Image (cartoon, rainbow, N blue to C red):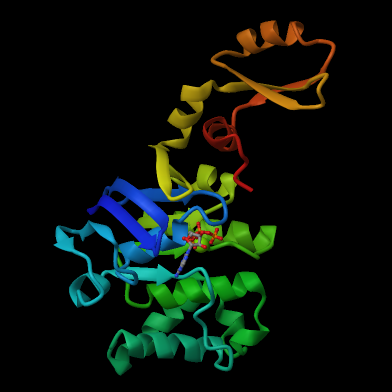
Length: 280
Ligand SMILES: Nc1ncnc2c1ncn2[C@@H]1O[C@H](COP(=O)(O)OP(=O)(O)OP(=O)(O)O)[C@@H](O)[C@H]1O
Ligand SMILES: [Mg+2]
């Protein structure tokens, strides 16, 4: 459904994304996971035709993506990293504005907007100015705007940044519901637990390169499902990975003098193992 081939973006001498290759199948939920400055926004902007690649191509449903391809653009919904709401307008008016942008017939506005307000649990806030909404509610309104056109493919750039834990869980539920409706979803995040909880497949990106790409379960399994984390005599935290809890316990006997824990391996461990750095 989406094919990304050798996608590269340079800004002057600086390479923000280098040779990204990715296949996204119909109906799957992909997470692009990486720290600040990894190249997530740059990559997503090339996917949606907002930024011209220096090299490489993006095909969506077999058609080459570029900013003038209105046929593809009508099939995708975009929730950018920074707000795209009109803060002076109400929730309802923001949605009318989005409906007009997509040239949806005026007689259909009412029913589509009501459906979205209901789906997003924004009914009670319909007459509030966007500027009066909490961060989480603003994100939900941004998602509602992107869904007005009933897109098949949805791109979200850090949809839960600055949202408290309750708001984040609500947004996660909405994304899960969209997934179960058969939508194809790509999101970027630097929250490990977000990628782990939501995504069928996780792509790790760091310094412009995609260096791992698989299901969360396989990524963790490959490293070893059990982690022994211990604090050594050099005041350094060490990590060792094991396939079985029994092996982890055997190892822990050899470091009994140190403070240690045995725990499940996380995607953070996978990232750390490759880069020697944490995602956040
Ligand atoms: N227009 C630009 N001109 C020059 N450099 C840029 C431009 N846009 C992005 N960059 C650089 O490219 C790198 C990747 O940026 P990008 O915004 O894609 O990262 P990100 O993974 O989305 O980070 P964040 O988590 O902070 O949103 C950064 O070093 C950034 O400074
Ligand atoms: Mg970004």
